[in-house]
Amino acid sequence: MTCIACKKGSTLPGKVTVTIDKGATVVVIRDVPAHVCSTCGEEYIDADTMRDLEKLVCAAQKAGLNIAIQHFKAA
Image (cartoon, rainbow, N blue to C red; front, side, top):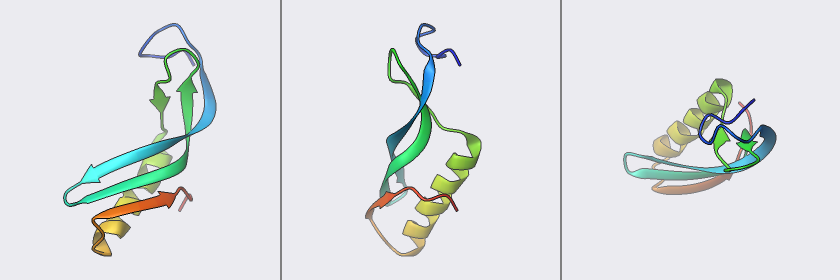
């Protein structure tokens, strides 16, 4: 797909690191599948992956963690 941000590059499958700051918890998730613009680096994550990320953040909050670093694994 053509990048929405720069309108010049094409997106290619890749992996990114996502940081989510929610309440008192910060979660860094590595190796998240995404499409990344070849020109500007804009990252696009699909809805299913976002739901999986939200589950990881909720689990970290329930565990009482303030900071967590994880590798992505689909639920």
